[in-house]
Length: 266
Image (cartoon, rainbow, N blue to C red; front, side, top):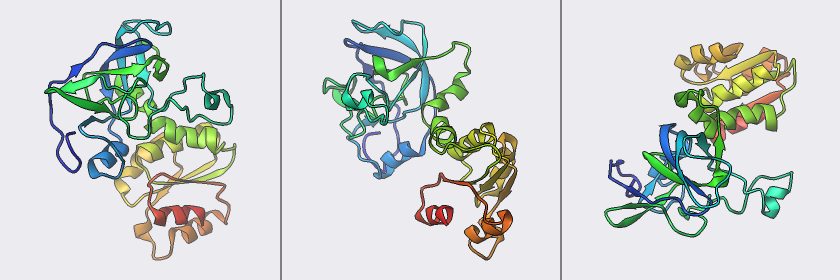
């Protein structure tokens, strides 16, 4: 992506060999996340030109000096929010915002340089990695080895979408057995929330979305019922209260709009 609000272009990019404690990865599959589109629209700060993409799976092609946790041929997931396990924030069990993690839009590796060049120009990494490419380079601590048999087209979503939604239900929200959950937004993250709620033992999982075409998939992964705000004249928060007798235990808003956030809270 050469600049915001412009189309992507397919280019021949040179991907430098990995330096010490780095890994070069051949990408097998990558997801497309709304965050990547935020870069296009200028809603997420980034240097340009940039290779976006941050949820993927690949094979280790080569390793730099000192790499011990993976080897060429290993199947891995690159992590855009990794932990170096050495800084004070990583050693604190209450946080995970490693100081080595680049969410500041610097677009470079830990040594301050990029591994991508195109037409003699530096191309920046997005969120530590950049996966809309055949090859990428990541720090050793930013890759997780996985089972070789894991299906690439599905497992790549662990890098962002699935872990965000599933983790919200199981790890952050800590949904309890027998509870009632409401999930606002039935995209990839919303479906992952539903799966987490189901695994946690929720007895009632209500999916909410304007698009009824999403209901079938939501029901297939664990929703017990789905509703569309278009079918009601009253606020959806009131509808949910009437449906459940004011007994919604957990609400998850995975759309990112102020209006739905307010509905979820109310």
